[in-house]
Length: 232
Image 1: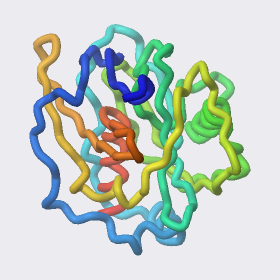
Image 2 (image 1 turned 180 degrees about the vertical axis):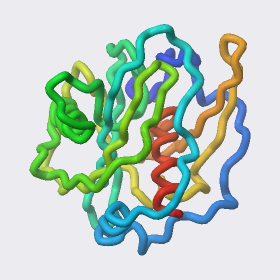
Image 3 (image 1 turned 45 degrees about the vertical axis):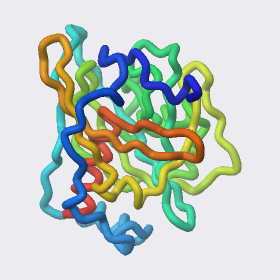
Image 4 (image 1 turned 90 degrees about the horizontal axis):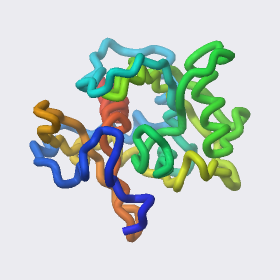
């Protein structure tokens, strides 16, 4: 398996999350109907949000560093069947290296909002032009064990002829069908004890040709919240 797909030694300290105990797969929950995944349905849902509760909002903290505000873009690419654009973080990064992630990062002082952070970071990381992005809204803040307070900014993205990943931050890019991510039959729940603390997380392994893209941790947690929001 290519190095960019490995979840080797990550910022969580977990050697390989794929080896963690499987608690279950949520076959019993209904997928979000395809009719609720259309462009107009997504616009309407964010314009008129329902009453709902996020499932995951924070991880057990395992660092003493001061919390930092951050934002990610959840980019729903407008293809015949919508997809979500994801990155594989460079192994050179100090936190969450090698993990599948959304484009995003820490808020800069000049950023006037979480949306500004998400759009700037997406442009810097993968070359996504802001003119091709239609922001729909936010999901609740997700707090990682590495002390990042992440605001997920959900957006519709018009496909670009090409992207320009920053090699210092991004090892790879790929897309996953939105319908796959919004079907709980693909949502695995895992657990492992690490440093004497019980930790649990979601994983959404996706077979991308010959590669398995292992979506887990914070990224999977935010996608689970997107599922809950659209299924409410």
